[in-house]
Length: 102
Image (cartoon, rainbow, N blue to C red; front, side, top):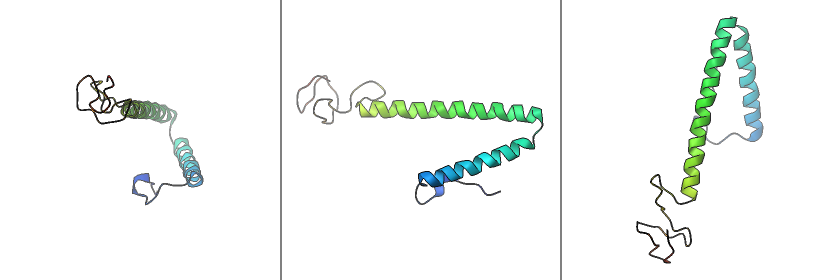
């Protein structure tokens, strides 16, 4: 069976191509599930749910990190950029460019 690896593609698939790939994967998934015993099907469903939950947590962490970057906040809550003028900040309580409090 041929596998699809999105990371080895020269360009991202179009929405139409992505819909076709998703439909193909869903058909393959259903065909494979039909071949399983009820016990195997239940185990596969539990694994699938665990993978989805882990991926959702990973994506939420990415979103949270992106929001911090967009706000100019590092993990220690120290701004990287002045929220007033956008100048890089190396520390301190005030922006060295515009004087705004950080």
